[in-house]
Amino acid sequence: MTPSLNSARPSSTDAATVSPVTTVTETVVPESTTHSAVPSATCGEVGPFEINVGSFRLALPSLTNVQFDNLPAYSTDNNDTADFPPIFNPFDHLFWGDGWTYVPPPIEPFPPQSGSQLAEFIPSPASNDTGSPDAGLIPSSSFGAGPRNYDSQYWFNATSVYVGCDNGATDPDIMCDFVATGYQWDPETREERVVVTQHFPQPPCPNFKNCTLRQIFFNDEFTALTTLSFYANVRGMIKIFFMDTIELGWYNNTCAAGLARSSSRKT
Image 1 (spheres, rainbow, N blue to C red):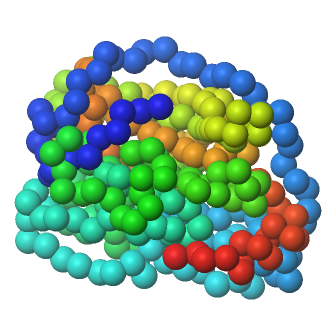
Image 2: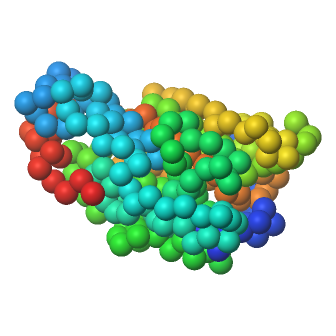
């Protein structure tokens, strides 16, 4: 599990130091299989969905699209000194750990992939971004089922996400190792366990000019997850990272599960 890191608005040198990671590790193929019920508007919230960094869009056109921009809007003259709002819990049924915030362009180097805001994770220990209520129920730099991790109705499959690292190096060989780790619920120990880790090398954005988020695709082992955790590592330093448009799908697509989600607290 990645370190719990809450921080003040940091410079690159404020972040925690780790050893560079160069290997790809993928472990424990999930034993369970995706439920095959066909999504239906009469079955509540089922099928694939997107989080545009908190923005949630069901794939079924007959159901309501809830946009990330529905979170409280704000503006700032200086993103380097502002206290940013946390992503409030739960948001679209999922819980977000400490350190997550959402930010407006154009001060940030990465424009959103869609909409007008994107998520940012701030790892420096001095942060004022301490998370929202119940953020402690899930590790820092993660999102997931939180206190409902034992309930398959809130397990999910991860497909892709757009990401960007705090790496303005002009040397193209100075890469960012963006790391994703998936957890599943273990009914025997009644705890979550790591089932898969995948590394995604990301090129720098020289001098933070004309930066764009890049889409990464998770392998097939990111299935039936309870938590999805991330970190960004540049030459042994844990860095800020940005994220938008997370493509997910509910693991349990039975009608009963869809109706339970639609009747539970979403935000």
